[in-house]
View 1 (cartoon, protein in one colour):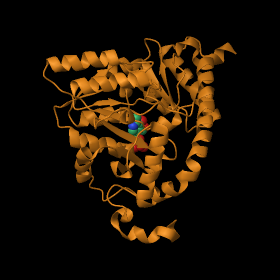
View 2 (tube, rainbow, N blue to C red):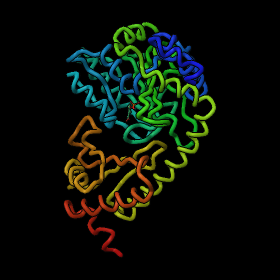
View 3 (cartoon, rainbow, N blue to C red):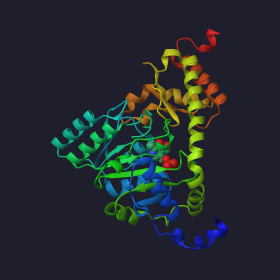
Length: 357
Ligand SMILES: Cc1ncc(COP(=O)(O)O)c(C=O)c1O
């Protein structure tokens, strides 16, 4: 690839313009048409440094301090941190087994309208919601889009986990279902190929894209990473991700089994539809923020629920456990260690599994 096209590295943007390496954008456009039902041209796709840069760019263009945004009550910690730093009002809306609740969203929008507030966007993670790992149905997506139209509030859909649905297919993205420009879509190769590559993408129409391009001041996303993906993906992405999903599902099964053995009924969770994490509820009395600190001292890293919910207090009974990176053995040992710590600190589980033996 370098022999063939290395010369283009001597220009900003690889002779592809400011949106990113053209062959990669062509691949993404084909993939989005096939997998997500989004019809767009490569020129409506901006390659970003991970989807995090997509989040930052959209926030920078659309938000000012004092603005209001709607997010899912349980959502990506990195999104909450960013919004807090920007000084915007965050309205958390209930999620259920189908993702963002349409009824609760309607109530929130109506309430804000009564107070003369029009939120700047509705941020949602429809496919493998983070942290609940649900996949939003097409019916619910249509309901959310309907509300977005009625109240004139754009939808900001973050589909970075969409390749990791166990079934291998995903529902149509809201960007594909919508007839107008009201949906901003971001995606990523972090969860499917490698987070360190820092390659994500943003899909938007030109009215918004032109404003985003104007503030994307990094001179273009990493060139070699884009070239590598454009070379690798057309022939290998599907095979790789099929195998990855199998590995992840197996690791999830190991984690679920370990939790059942170690925590018994004290750990409540729903079986994820895909992804890399499990969202676990522990009984009253467990303070998961403290548990996280204690666990870390023993070398076990977990996410405290308080950082993954708009109402931090409500998150104190929850933990988010990632199973993608550790081996099956490490998952077993980690869960056993966590149960031991939780038992010692909070008497949950009432009897630690080791005592059963
Ligand atoms: C929902 C969601 N969006 C965006 C990101 C950022 O990912 P990246 O910038 O690596 O694409 C993450 C990472 O965990 C995430 O969970």
